[in-house]
Length: 166
Image 1: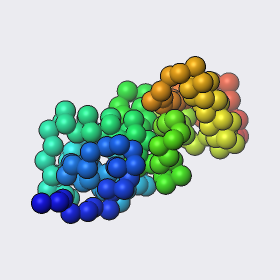
Image 2: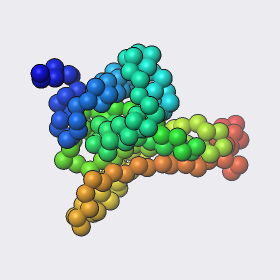
Image 3: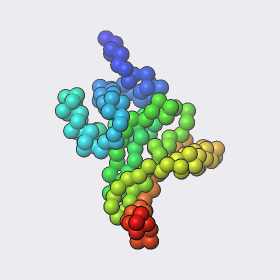
Image 4: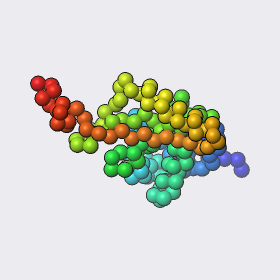
């Protein structure tokens, strides 16, 4: 008996992934909740609550890894080395391009706030894509880049600090 079609089937198939119940549910849930990045633990809790889908932590970890490698999810790592996942946009769901795991945020090592990198986004994306293309040109495949940018923000900097605003 053929398996009924699911809204995520074309995306999974286009990226060479199996269309399992777990893959469908995880991708569908992240697509529906794409305004936030989710940790592994948050996803596991949400899937049980909202989808009545119980996945052991290793299975979910492997599934998130496969979806990230296929560029269906963006994965960022914070200063505590915790991974955060969110659905990639349609423009990023290109199986023919190497994966760039989203644009980084700047994370302050003092106050742990995260900031967008307005003005530098295009240059960062170009640099990452150039690195990926260079590696591809010498035969490497299945490439991805995960950028983490950390330092001390202007508010926490002893040089600029709050006196900068006064």
